[in-house]
Amino acid sequence: MNPNDLIQRIQQAIPDAQVQPSGEGCSFNLRIISASFADESLIKRHRRVMATLNDLIASGDLHAVTLQTHTPDEAKS
Image (cartoon, rainbow, N blue to C red):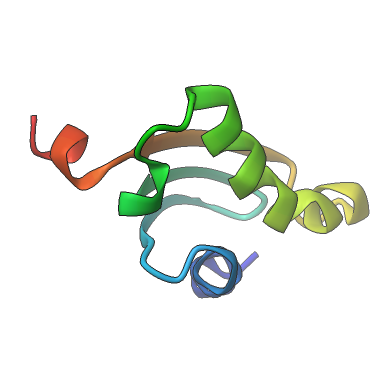
């Protein structure tokens, strides 16, 4: 799995997202910063991101994903 593909997918769904992937193969840690996460619970944030990746997980192209989702203010602290 190419990290740039993950960035593109997430940014299509969350246009202001800053996506910082780390990992390789089919296992990634994704740090995602977006103002659109304000007033959303952690679970809602993760569901939004995972909705963009579910087909990759179902196909086996992506096996493991760890998410860190932050608003810009949360990312500063």
